[in-house]
Length: 88
Image 1 (cartoon, rainbow, N blue to C red):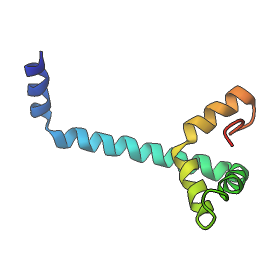
Image 2: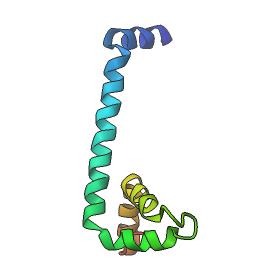
Image 3: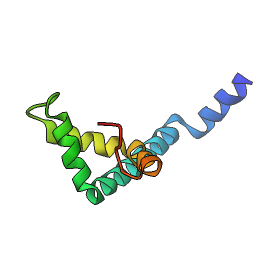
Image 4: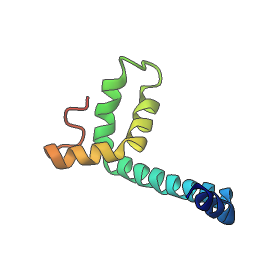
């Protein structure tokens, strides 16, 4: 079985799977930026919550959390009715 898997990987090439991973991460980041654009007030609340941990770079930390954590924030809005409830 492992020989078949190895043969399939070598047929396609590792660069094909690397390219696929990069395309998936690009789509993930674009969706995160779109989510952040439409939820600016949530980013302000998150920035205030992160000020204690990151006093100088709280705005950058809030942006990174919003872009990378959009699925959690989106799911929490369905569970609680408010995005980010109970997270900060």
